[in-house]
Length: 374
Image: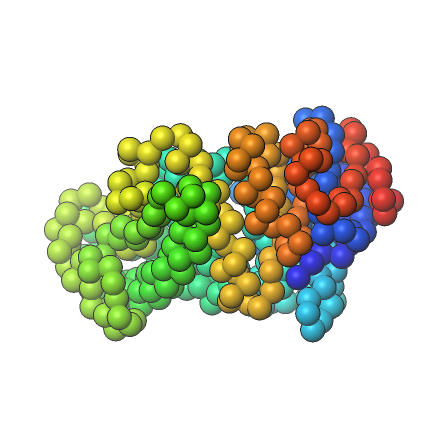
């Protein structure tokens, strides 16, 4: 899978921009705050329909415009797929092969991307919310139905929390409605839990392969799913539903007192272990960064295994955050097989380590110059 071209209109600081990509390594070179990251963000938005930098879509539209668009052509093994995304103050619209898609699950997965930015190095030591977001975004790319189940779960969770509060404040007395909400929560939450378990097992396999290579086989990386629903090794969906039902029953009285749902995927966590020691708690900064790098790069092979196509890799100024050894491992992993878009302020980290010739675009004050830039 590769992105052949990109067209922006009124996106961030770009009134119009048209780029064509003819190399496997594409570098956007320029000083900070010139618009390099905006281009990578637009590719991410084209793939995922939303930004990794903001939840306010209005920020993506140029300040004096009412709408923005991102277009691109994805070349796959057996098809060429034009993608279009339109952003307005009323929402967004997506098209595949010039046909509007009403369902998000019909659009997500047409272009698979992996983004690696400096903040991703905090995947290990950051908040549990960050790791849950990582799970949701990455599973959603290879399993669009997961996004539907997740959205339904989040809607019901919000309704249930509101109703628990109303019961506590004596504004509602209908216990039957709470039972219905609980049953719906279990239905969609169990699907989310099972999909996460399956994904984490496969992620662990690929991440450990990479981690052992970086550590020269001195360190074994394992990933555990620390769930608020116990007995985490579920055999099937029925087993998850049974465990989830029991978990909610156990915290039933606490939920009434605290007026919030206390069990479910919204409270779950990822635990990273090196040689059976918790990296978040006991790992060095180097081990934490190596773990984050291994986990992010593991997605390349995981997505290839699932879809039959390598994803597109977006590296946003991440080279300067890695030491020479990790830079070499990153470049060796992607070289020759993954189309990579890289932003950097200098070629220092790249020029002596790559054997492939890059396509370079120079970015200065929102102007892009280089091969195939208009």
